[in-house]
Image 1: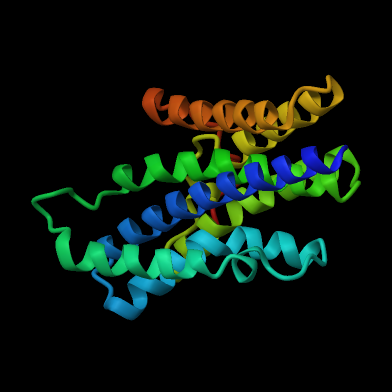
Image 2: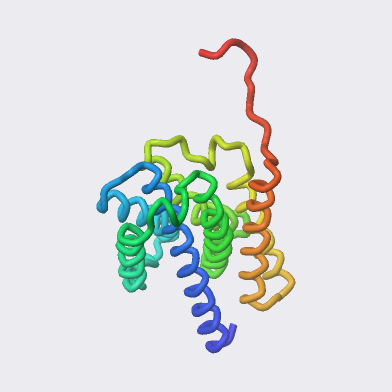
Length: 218
């Protein structure tokens, strides 16, 4: 990779990560609104939603500084988004339902899968590890959001493919790299596949089968 290509890839990753951060922050805002949290709770839930997955990825990859420390302006954008939402958005503008939260969450899932897998591949990790890193980046923020909101994480119990969409999408990026596709195209293709797969699952109600072990429940 030439220095120019490296700069372009870094810029593309930054844009994707920024949009993903905003998308997950919006899902956190809606989750906090559903729980009628105070301003501190709203900012905290939006923050863990936006930064949780990427932070865990950076910890596992021993990557410093953390992505949100490297871009402190994202913290100000998140705080501004929270303050604006609490000041101006009312029930007449939107209903903070679970379904409303799922659409920005689907977009964030696709974006963070793409950038998480790309970052791991740039660290020369094996393909399967890179795909898992992309999945962790994409899923863990939503898991933390639901835990903080005292819910079973939707990634684990709503039966509609979530982590599966991320896992499959990560392989799209790996395949694009094998075929020497441009990095920007690989990021867009991965984002599109994951987001559309999750949106299709939500739209059609497609679900994974539940595990039903034999015997009476304990």
